[in-house]
Length: 269
Image (cartoon, rainbow, N blue to C red; front, side, top):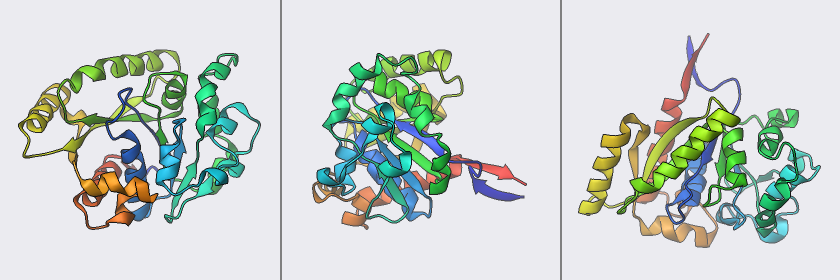
């Protein structure tokens, strides 16, 4: 018996939280980079009209000839949209502000909730030999986020270590439940990730305790610390693992990648 991580195809994870400023894009970029560093082939799908994941991985706006908008609403081959980042093993489907109008345009499509699902299951996807697909969702529970959840196997939820943090989870959990009932019965919670964590701060400790008391094993053991290097890295268009490879933030995302890989191991003959 050998022990491999999802040999049958890529694990698709939507990184979602309708609240902004919780470290969602930061987590997508740096978890993807850490998985790539660990030898996994990773595709980031930038589903946020702000395009911050694309910028944070070094993709210039002028190089985004085709984007997520085109795989949702255009007749464009996925291979024409996927770009190689400067990080080995890390690919991206970039986004631009064009995506901001997609929500309205999607409404006219009969398969409006399944467009990303179908795009990520084109036969050409096999050529990329992917282990993971991470979808960076917009900070809202709109049709783009629903597309991500229907396309995904699971949802990873960044949770900022702040007052009322858990209260914001209820609407997200409700949306996940609705998606299970209407389009993706196998969708599950990959995990809740505590971000911007400061162990010297009593509030962070209390949020962690509340999260673990209420959500148990759904909460990752890894916590992402409040770290200036993590905040600086996007302005240099690179993951923190490249910007400052020895920083506490980089080490934390490596630990998260290791924990995620371990959780997703399956036994095969």
